[in-house]
Image 1 (cartoon, protein in one colour):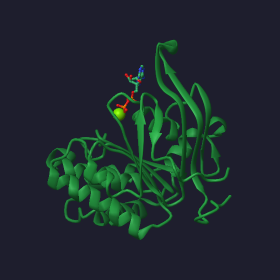
Image 2 (cartoon, helix red, strand yellow):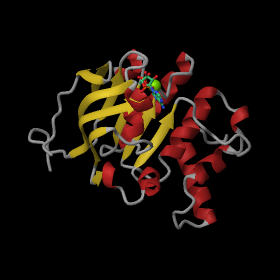
Image 3 (spheres, helix red, strand yellow):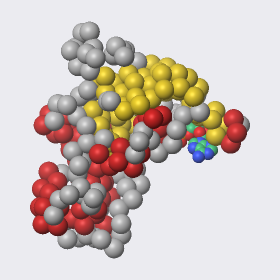
Image 4 (cartoon, helix red, strand yellow):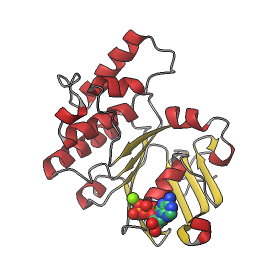
Length: 236
Ligand code: ADP
Ligand code: MG
């Protein structure tokens, strides 16, 4: 299943996906087609309400399309045996509101993602510390989220998303609530990821043109469809 030009396979294939809400009153997606190659970093841009988050939720199997097909690596999302397992092992999720557990430390917040993975407590702890060091948070492992800055919290969320080495990371406006300096550091973490893990596929919704500029490709959405940037068609 390699792409003709690059030799890389398809990580994500979306075909004619529609998503209605409220019995069809809201047509959030109106025929989305999207191909993302393994190892690509794609930025998704477009006006508020155009369906970006809805698309990301479908890719994360947090919701299912009204019609159309979504495939992520070998997984046909309409036929997942175990959606929870898919969310735990195939996709790492980073959202603007990072959903850290407030009374747990940074390290414990990362360790949560490692429960149910056959790792011992000591191994989980070691892995969490390693992941936090990778996002430049060494020394802050014992802080609770309320004692971290917005950018630091977002980096904890990234560490947590990467805990199980997912092949795909889905990020919804990860720098949306951050000041410029923090946004730059968070973007830097993604840039380093791209350099260190060439196989990692990243789909990132962003309003920030500086963040989008770092991606390999920018996909533009409008009114529930992709209107620009859909060039890398993989064979399916
Ligand atoms: P974006 O992320 O691009 O701002 P969304 O994907 O969040 O846009 O939303 C697309 C459209 O779908 C909007 O009109 C939004 O109000 C609507 N929408 C999203 N989620 C729901 C939902 N759970 N119920 C009803 N309407 C929704
Ligand atoms: Mg959104």
